[in-house]
Amino acid sequence: MGEKTTKQKILDTALKLFAQDGYKATTVREIAKAIGIEQSALYNHFKSKDEILESIINELASLLIANIFKEINDDPHAYKQGKSLLHSISNKFKLISFDNQNDSLFRLMMQEIFSNSKIRDIYNEALFQENVKKLSGLLFMMMQEDMIHSSDPLMLAHEFFAPLFFYQMQVSLLKIDKKSTSSIISLFEKHVDFFWENIKIEKKESLF
Image (spheres, rainbow, N blue to C red):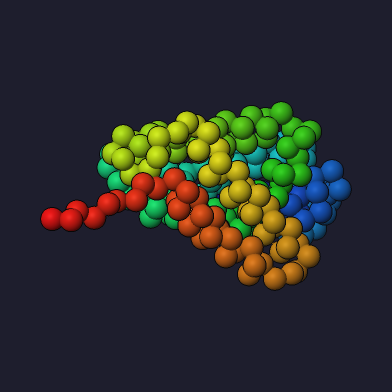
């Protein structure tokens, strides 16, 4: 087994255990045992459990939430999609809940956010505020084109994102308890429909 493969396997296994049992409750011995290597072999790659967590935290930037505007940024006319654009953003939040890597990262982030300042910074800046800022810009353009009613675009962006984070957390909690997520999943679409109906400008049909 190559160096890179072993190191990545340690990170993947540690993330799974951290998300499942919590960072503090998971030991280096348990990580090594789950992989099938000696504890001493693990220390050839990481000096401590803290160093493993540090490496995993750096992967938080790869969360799907942090990249929801990646394709949109390349399209200067993306705002013209209106409701469809909002649906695409909402769907990416849903995907996180069913992608094991993203879901584990999200669970770990939620568990450690109160005790780890670096995780709080990533959550506040990269995952939330940065996306709010980008969406507010798109909503402002929609206002300029008379697609939606004039309002505070930053406030509207907060109003749009807040329920998505809540639904995502609910899905994760239900999955932990092995309960059905169907009732929550439908809320992602319903939220977009409700939000759009309350901000869109009805186009009046011409009488001529």
